[in-house]
Amino acid sequence: MSVTKVLTIAGSDSLSGGGLQADLRTYKEYKIEGSNVLTCIVTVAPNTDEVTVLGVSLPTLKAQLRECLSKENEIDVIKIGMLADIEIAKVVANHLKKVKDIPIVLDPVLALKESGLTSSQDIIDFFNTELMPLATITTPNLREAELLSGLVGIDSIEKMEEAARIIHKTGVKNVVVKGGQRLKGETAYDVLFDGTTVTILEEKKLANSYNNGAGCTFASAIASGIATGLTVEESVRKGKVFVFESIEYGIPFLPDLGNVYQGRKNKSL
Ligand code: PXL
Image (cartoon, rainbow, N blue to C red; front, side, top):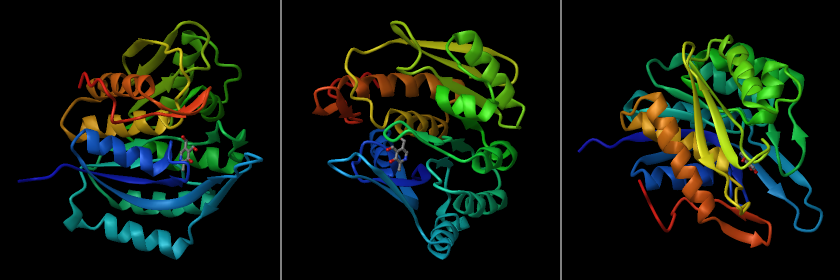
C-alpha cells in the first residue's frame, strides 16, 4: 500500500497551538503520514507572555533536511512554516531548490500575533525573491500580506485582491490572502488568486476566539488536500472548512483564548 506523505519544515510551538504540532495533527486527520524538519523552538513565558524564538543550529537543520528530502522518502508535498531567521531560510531554500516536482505550500510566518514580533526586512525580501518562486501556494494573513506586498492598511476584499496580485508577481503560482479575525464584519473572507482568476471564499466568523494555530492548520490542510490529489482550489476550500470546524471545537485555556482542535467533534470531512 502506498502511503501519502507530507513533510513539514517548521518550528515547535511549545504551547502546541500552532507550529509543527498543529501541522502533524492536521495530517493525522487527513490520514496522511507527516514528518518534520525542526527549524526553531518558540516558547512563551507564563507570567510575562514574553516570546522567545530559538533557532536550531545550521548543521542540525542541514542534517534533518538531507534525511527528510532524500529520494527514498518519496514526499508528496512540502509545507513550510516558521523559519525564524534569514540563515535558516537560506539553508531551507538551498535544499528546496534541489527537489523537483514536489508541490510546496509556503506559510509566510513573518509576524507572530502572540508577540507583535515582526520579521526584519531582509527576511521579507528573501521570501519574495527566493522562496515564493519555488512555491505552489502561499498563505499570508493580512499583516503578512502587507509586509510582502508593501501595501499599507489592507482592510477590504479589494485590497486583499490587490495584495494577492502583487505577491503573485514574485513567481508563486497561487496566493491565498486570509482575512481572518482582523478583517471587520461577520464573515471570514479569503481571497485566492491563481494568476488568472480571483476566487473569494466565505465562511461565517465564529464567536469564539480559540484560533491559536489556525494559520498553521490551514496551510497544512491545503498541503494535505494537494497530497491527496485535489486541485489547489479544492484544497483551499476543503482546508477552510477544516479550519472552521477546528476553531468551532477549539480548546480554551483562557476565557478569550484557545487552541484550534483538529480532532473536531463534528467532522463534515
Ligand atoms: O501560528 C504561527 C506559528 C507558527 N510557528 C510556530 C509558532 C506559531 C505561533 O505561535 O509558535 C512555531
